[in-house]
Every structure is written in C-alpha cells, then in structure tokens.
Length: 91
Image (cartoon, rainbow, N blue to C red; front, side, top):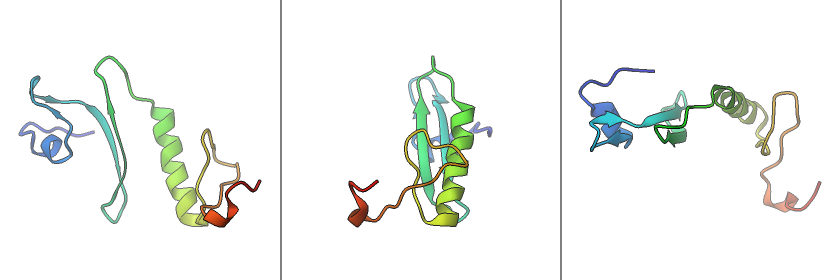
C-alpha cells in the first residue's frame, strides 16, 4: 500500500480514475527484477481477495524454484504443471 498524492504512480501504472481524481483499487505484483508479473484492477464496490494475493505470491515463488506453472485453484503442497507444449493433453 502506498500514498500517491501527486497521482504520478497511479498514472504510471494506468490505474488513475481521472473523473474521480483517485486511483482505482488495484494490486500490482512486481518481481525483484522490476517486471510486472500480474495486475488486478477492482471496481470500487468489490474488495480485494488477500488470500488470493498470498496464493499468487506463493505460486510465483513455486514457479521460480521449480520451473513449473501452477493450475487453477493450486495451493502450496500440490504439484505444479509443466509448461512444455509437448505435454499438452498428458496427465
């Protein structure tokens, strides 16, 4: 979380609601090498899902350590999946 009184950051990440003069609710995941890995922008009436944020961080770390991706609804402790196209359709 951060404060962006000058709106420089929210403009840079394209999450500024110009009509309201404030940033949308947004979560941006940036890797240590400054690559945006994921970006979520939420409507005002919908809150963020912090358990999902934690799961994403864990999935990023898992992928980095194993070289595997993670399927939908993956949780730590489950196996990942290969991103090798030769494995498509194999279980």
